[in-house]
Image (cartoon, rainbow, N blue to C red; front, side):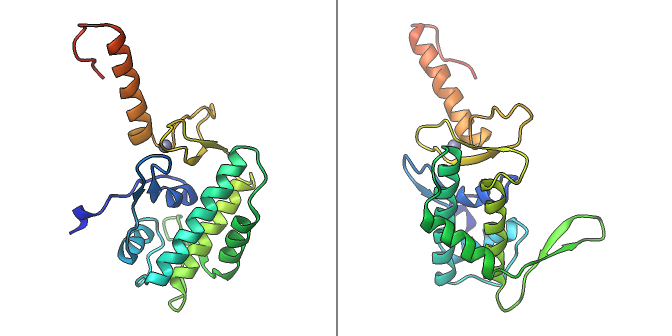
Length: 194
Ligand SMILES: [Zn+2]
């Protein structure tokens, strides 16, 4: 069954991995959490395992996701943050009651309340978004150079010169397109190699 659904893009930044559950926003949009079960799968993969998700949770997830997307895009562009997006982020952060705990081997894990685990998980994601949008964390918000993507991503590279939200997808595609374009400029040179 799982092969029927678009897979997840695994990123190191929680908030932008979450916005990456909808990709190719400027092209042929891919929804990677098309149903509550996939939202639960994504949360489990991200260290925020919950009992189960409902349609209502999925709706809240998408509202939060698009709010993060809008606010992060505005911040990356140096524009004013959309008030409605800020409201959603703040509300999700306020109602979440997750507790950070330390595992015996020194890692951080989130404890979610059994009665409100999905909302707690959203609270963790919202707080993560607030950290990167406010500039509290070491790194730079930027927009993906791919014209069909333009996703906001958080660049933690030393040079702060990353151009793509994801090297394996957007970065690779751009590289191949460039090679193809170069190949066309040189007729009869055969297939460009990557
Ligand atoms: Zn991208």
